[in-house]
Length: 360
Image (cartoon, rainbow, N blue to C red; front, side, top):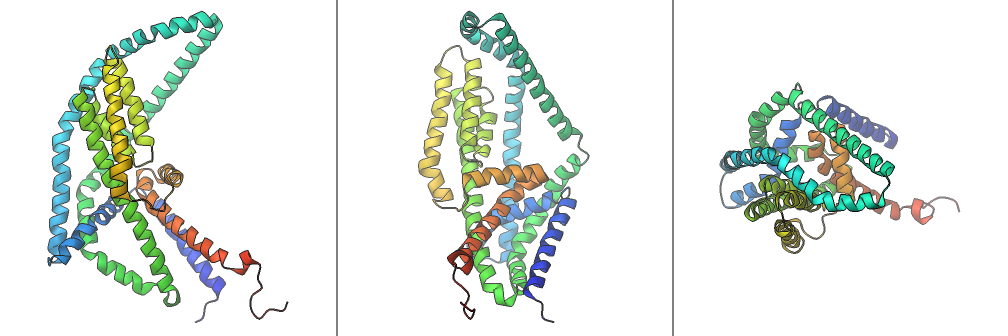
């Protein structure tokens, strides 16, 4: 049965809408599956190298999956006690930090009092109290939602037990899945679709895999560097700054501001703040001149603003699941947009030429 062009378009649109609705309805249980697919995608190049060395796919998949999750568990066991110690020590020193910041701000406060009227000072105090209360309310609500959510325990357990299983089967059967999906493509558009999928894979492999390695490297560098210079909570601040580097410029900027602020509260002079600043300066130079060109590449096809928007939109719509899906979706939209633009620029809609066979 022949289907018109308009009919095919309606079928594709209906299928896309049904997929989005299904994704939204199942968003609460999809996290371990998406995480498993993401880990498998990240590890697939290593499996391919082992296959080229003559190893069977099943054995390579078993070794890589076990090795990866053993490494993750080992790092967690080693780092968790250090993080706990730093957080507890930091919490005990918070009153001292607050007093140190107050003492540092006394000269500035005296200068402000000399130029501001009592009413202006009172407004500043009221505004500061209001902002502090709002921030405390937001923070309390966030942790309350995290700790009391009905699916928190289920999600954690599913990540621990289901994600490794999904990773194993995706790594082992990836070539079978891609071959089967390739056979389902419309025959007259199959080559065009494959070309676009290949471009999407190039963008994702260059950005996701490269950026993940970049974030891990920067997190280790910042965490160790800040710990070595003696910053309290240095490992937490440094590793968080490295992970936030997934969003361009956000990680280094946020880590620098928080690190220098903590250093000012911790140290009576400017030695520690300068050392913290030097750690982030060296890390930024290392990222821009060595790590980013080597791991990510010069041209990845995803503009930083588009990356930020995709991550924020994905998080707002689907939570952490949306953050995991944001970059693949952004890559797909980017490739399809460029493909559509190329077709538009050679079409009569852009050039103004009349199709062949039409009357002048």
